[in-house]
Image (cartoon, rainbow over all chains, first blue to last red; front, side, top):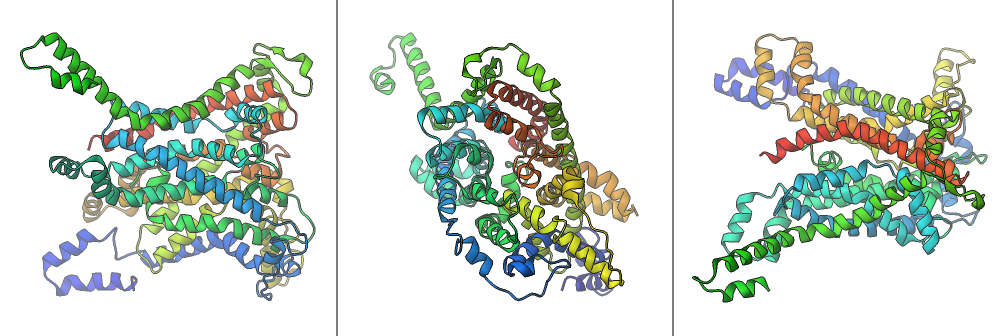
Length: 304
Length: 322
């Protein structure tokens, strides 16, 4: 379809009236008459190149172990779900479910905690801002710039002393602190989109705080809150260092389970790919669900 | 309390009292404004600032949990070791190389992709989705795929494709790469560039789409070449987005642990500071030394972050001024 538009754009000027031409020019991005086909082909080739590891991971996960480890690759080999059965512990009896449940628990509960703490904070930084609110914002951001390794030893020693090692709740608190600064920044940028006039109108009409939150702020901020939650979920789900140091057999998360595949164990490529697919699925879903707001969220609200 | 006294006081009463009431009411209002902020602030100070203070203290101690008798004050000894020990110095060097090369490469490739995606073509949405996919694979899983499915010297996809292409030309002696043992740092860099390019692309694409098109069109009318438009209009506009992407990326990549841990287990000169610190305290139990190295990372990050904050601040001020 869109390759047709250059042609129509080139022919319309002769036929239609001048104002239409100007309007058309004003609407289009870049020069529509050249390079688009070439750019499209280049973009598609690069997109496929970038997606190849992901597509190969998915394809290999549906191959048998012997078909997975061939040189040259057996692209058209028979498909099977054996690798998934193996990953879920059919022959070894080692089930990934406890680690998946731990990951879900840690990611979901820490995201809930983050929202509980970040929404009021963002409210006090945007809708009814405190004095020197920019300073507070930069304090939040500066805590994110401190690498985890610089604080992990005291946290580890503390957990060891109070017996919180290998306890999912300690990990939940850590993930909450890891995501809170980002969430405050994202949320502030989303709450700042609530028009001031609407807030003033609500105040004049005598709406109380709850009503204002429900009827004025929530409808505008809800997509942003959802995106923030999804991004926090992704960061927690992905985290390895804290989980590796602070958990063990009981509270180990999915990334920790994956580290069991770091060293080769004979023919296990299809199983590794199946594991990678299963453990990445929640992140892929969350990421594509947040796609519209992903840039604004990841750039901490600096880019819209 | 204050509202009650304010209601009782009638006009004409002592002005000092009303002033005082006013001041205390203002203070109460200020605290009411601050109240929603406090839980988040206090939580964060306890969980992030306090441990760092402890790290700072431990960094001046001679503390190895395996030899408990020798714990004591060490002065700057640990810092001297961090900066002179060949392994840790190598780790500092590796961290810098890794961060700079990954950020620059993913910015350049991300810029190219963003420029392509800024044009209209068939299936642009799907191409964009495919390009984001690498960023949405769990980092450990991505590193495992690179290690076992792509870079494995025997049956990895890259060597597999080389064999296949060479066989097309009738050759049965294709070149075979073994990046993981011959250039392990390169393997880590490539896998990280693959994961971070989509991030840069998304930020730069948003930057491109916020570009004022009227100046570009005016330049086109005046016969400016595409390169001149890119060089003098697009690039200056993108500058702050390039800085933002680069510095946010740098903050995350300086801290990278997953790729180094998974791809090379820190072997053959690929151990960056986060990995070296993890080794130092988790396996060598050198608590003092690990803490000093942690403080060094923080100092390095503060240097980078000062620039990052300035960039974020300039975008932020623009927004706050609206």
